[in-house]
Length: 623
Image (tube, rainbow, N blue to C red; front, side):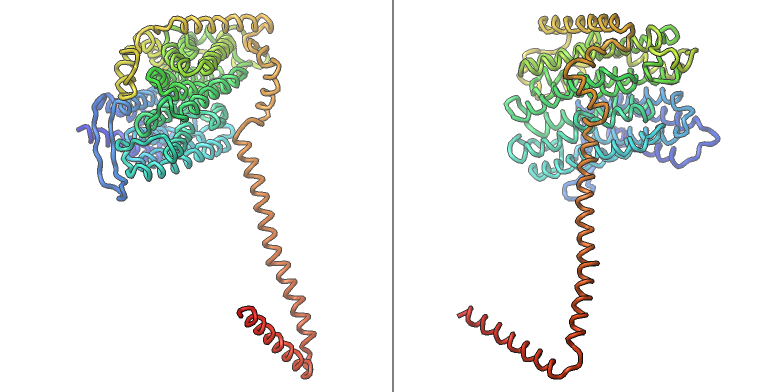
């Protein structure tokens, strides 16, 4: 029965997606949204039914060790449950959010296909089968961005190129891993992190980072925040991509390879995580668009997950995975609140927003809970996962802890700015106000936000439920040697808790200073923006000079010009030089061959003499 349930979890949304794409919906334009919601409800029911069964099966498929193998473990089971729950809430939200969009039918079809591929990637137990589902997500990523407005195709191509390059690295990593292990069965692989094993690990790490949106594979996400539909941001960059990317990173680190604190790969992962935290949150701090600010935070939060897993310590690994779950909850809630604001106020430009708390109190309440969670305010869920990551980071080196804690300061500062600018006060520019009359969002949009905000509270106050019931059993052998029986409850290191409280208080004081200095919430961090050293960096970023995609385009442009010059040179050799040489030679020969018999005899004698001299030279050289 479990085998059938797992197959249906992949097949049902895939078939429903094809039906949605093929069947016209002119008479019932609401049908795709309803179908998507029902199918995602079915997916959630399957995920609940199979959890937490440990089950595996394999069918012969392509030969050469490539089997259709699925495995339900404690780790894949809870990630699958998270994918199904988040997909259901987002599709419920989309019944209203995408109702009037001309691309609604295509969008819901791609959502269903994304759900099918996501379930397949999480449940796959064969590296090639995993790649099939993983690459399918690249197609749906492109299609869902292209279903947006403004200039979606440029952003969709950008996302396709960036994620596609990381997927190419993943393919090489899969081939090398399979070669070293002698098998493609993920459950049977256990490689050391040395020599080619380390190379394979790094290639797989790049693939996981690209899917999760870590730096430097991030720059498409802020663009998508502006161009793609808001439900897409809540579903993929805000939720599923983090679940999938960090799930695969955890699977690679805990199962396929032997990651340990002594391995040189561990500090590499930690530095990647720390850099992602700090650089992305600094960019989020100065954004003036609601969704773009959230997009940079979606990137920054990945850093905490990579940092935690990179510590290779039980407390850090558990914290990184707990943060993965928490991030999917509060980040999706934040993007959904942005979609509600955009629908009702007509914009997400913070210069045109203000005072929405009076007219959208439920949306504001959900935002405040999710914002407190991502900022690490107790007793919300983000506080507890961050404290676990802090604990692991400090054990590996104070610099990692300092960067992670600094990221929390900037996170809190940017959300104080965002909340103040959108829900309190008045617009920074009264003349740019789009809509004077704003109402609360419809209930299909509110219910998912309320549910996610409720989980932020539940997973914080009762954190033993996710930690002891989901996370710790999932990491299995990595818990060996843990200095705690459990990581649930309030953090035991009160010094770290006190430092966290001090940083949050400092963020509040910084906000008060900035508001008093500029007279508006939107200007609360202007003094940081104009700080010596940072101002020039921000200016470079504003021009796109720090975008790795632009570097890639520039490199490709130079390479294209060089190849074009080589192509023109080859054409000149064959078309101009060769033909000209042939014309000159033929003209010279025509002048020599004028019908004179004595001249022909002289040429024949000269040719014969040349042949004799060459033969003598060859014979003399051989002797």
